[in-house]
Image (cartoon, rainbow, N blue to C red; front, side, top):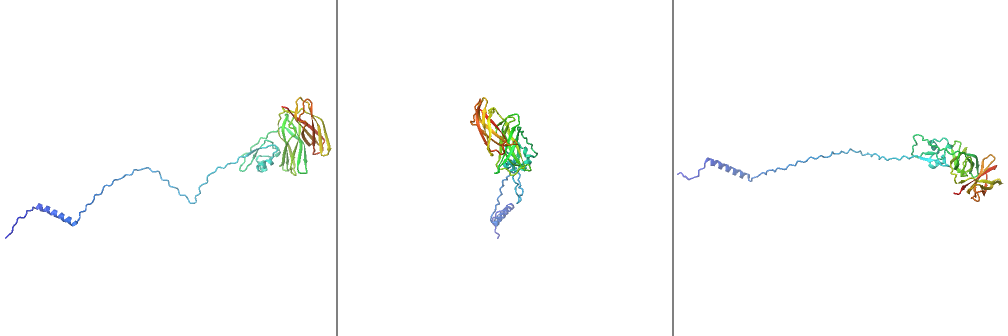
Length: 336
């Protein structure tokens, strides 16, 4: 017998959907776990701002043996020394003063004759490091007051000293004072061996008046070929304070021994002005007129009254040679 029961009726459309559901469940069961892939976040983008950078300095390669250049140091060029010749100086003493060669001193200054040097003349001193002038520089030589040296006498001593005696004549038309005489000794080549100077005995010389001098060389050269005697200094004199109206009275010369001469006498003042500090100057001459002795003393008393007042003097001189004649002069000052 056939058994029949009531089963639900499934349509073909429902059957297709049911089959799809079962297929999905079977697929999930086979995987065992369901993996979910995260979605990658969107990263923020940063755009850099462009800046202007300074250019890079590339150092130049320095060799190992490089030596930096030396730093320039300014060099001071020595200036030449200008020397003004003073009384009693010559090339020998000037060269020794500055430690230079006398021949170089002559060459630089173009000096052909040392005798022509004058007081006040300018000389270039060639100091070390100085190259000299580009061209010779002319020097101006002052013209001295006209005065001459005469009646020179040389008197050597056994001790090596040398005394040169003579007298100066004022050949100008004005009164002169502060007169200095220079004696220079030369060798055969006209080079100075030694030089000395001295003032004349009288303070003031009137035109045409004479005054003696004595120049002493303590150590004179053993030999010299020639000499020069010249007035190297003189100045116009102020005679307002001088008292020259004086007379010599009763002057006598005595020579008790061969080596001594004595002059005695008096000074008279005929003027109306008193004379003070009266100096008496004596000069001795040999038969040839050369000066062989001179000395000055102060009268006794030193003040001579006006209107014919008198004062004594006594002078002793050791002459360098025979005495044939003499001269005595006096000079005083007026009271202010």
